[in-house]
Structure formats: C-alpha cells, structure tokens
Length: 220
Image (cartoon, rainbow, N blue to C red; front, side, top):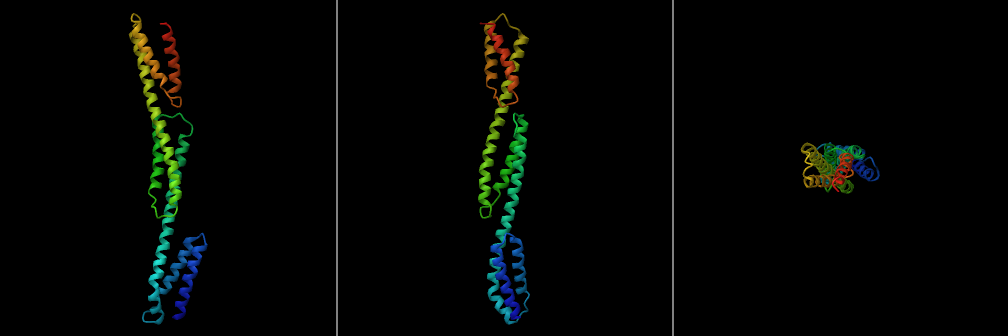
C-alpha cells in the first residue's frame, strides 16, 4: 500500500509539472485527477491511508484551484469566440453604406450582442484583459453605428418634410403670393441641405434641391 501512496504522490507531482509546461491543460488535469483517485481508493486503516489523509486536503485544494482557472479560461474563450462571431456579422452587414434605418438598427443589435458576451466575462477569468481590449474596440464601433443610424433617421425626416413642402406648393400653386412661395422654397432648401451625404436620402435630396433652387431663381 505504501508503494501505491508513493506512486500516487509521484503521479500528482508529475501532473503538476505537466500542467505548468504543456498547452494541453485539460489532459494534465485528467492525469492529476487520476492520481488523486488512486490515493482516495487506498483501503482504510492502513499506513498509506493515514499518510494520505494528512496530505490529501492540500492536494485537493491545489487541484480545485487550478481546475477552476482552466474552466474559467475555457468559458472565456467560448464567450470571446461568440463575441467575435457577432462582430464579424455586424461588420459584414454594415460595411458598404448607406443603409436604411432598419439595417443600421440590426447592426446595432449585433454589436450589442457581441459586447454583452464580453461584459459577462468575470475579472478573475483568464482572457479577461483580451476581452477588455475587444470590448473597447466594439464599444467604439457601436457608438459609430448609432451615429450613422441617427443620421439616417434624421435625413429621412428632412427629405420627407421637403417632399411634403413641394407637394403643397404644387397643390396650392399660390403664384399670386410670391413671398409665400419664396418662404416655402427656402424652407424646403433648408431641409434638403441638412440631409447627410452618407444616407439613403441623399441622392433624392440632391435632385429636389436642384429643383427647389431653380424654382427660387424664378423669383429673383
């Protein structure tokens, strides 16, 4: 039995060394667990069992501490991989603007899901610092997308207001009141000039802007 005890201790020492020097942490942990199991299986009321009882708690504490780190590291890698998948999807979806407000919102959602994965990684897990670097980058990307989304929404509103103004002028055809027409045209031009160049409304706004400016010149 003493031989089993010595072999068990030797196996634990070997597993610890293997854990420190190998990339395959899970295999080293399995060897460590097997060594602990051998010690736990020693018959009661033997000298080897008594010797094991004195050292086993420390062995088990070491094993639990190390296995927790490996588990946390695996969990972190999984979350980082998931975050990167969402980030890749967001990048592909948003890489050639302009887009509708609905598409920008979907981009926001993808970046936010990526960020959520990174934010769920505990401070004590290995890979935490890597996650924080990605988090800073992804948060910046999300902020940029939110700005573009807002620009799209506002530009669409400006275009709609301008279109409604033009339709009202055509409908009313109030040529007997030039000041009214001039004021309306100036308001239309002001709205169209606020349309952002990187939005879906821009091309249409430029067409209407040319139309409105030409109309205004008729009153000069």
